[in-house]
Image 1 (spheres, helix red, strand yellow):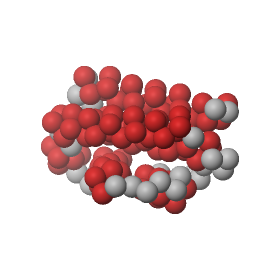
Image 2 (image 1 turned 45 degrees about the vertical axis):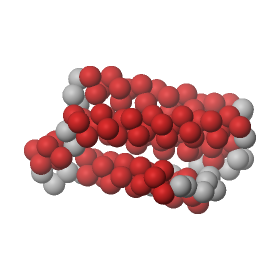
Image 3 (image 1 turned 180 degrees about the horizontal axis):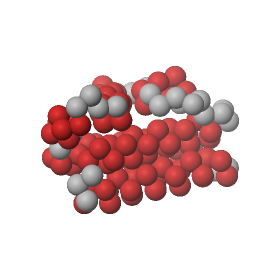
Length: 129
């Protein structure tokens, strides 16, 4: 693994760790931000490992399919799409109180589990290539 790929992976792992810390503090909007960042950065590690420059985009499905050439199973695609929507909603909320109710602690615990499984799967893909 080259230095650039390794760097993306380390940053992705730090974002995943930050999300877990923020979950304990019940900072749900920040949890979603860091979960999204973790998957975005591990996908960019895969792009770099393929010998390309990671694009400056945030759409997880586009990164996975168009840039990493990953064939997503339906449930994995649904996780990426769900997290993209959650990221946009919490990053630019129209009503912060509504947003905090929608993206509550239970929601964040559930999406954390989905992201952990997806992160491990992507890391395994990265290590095999």
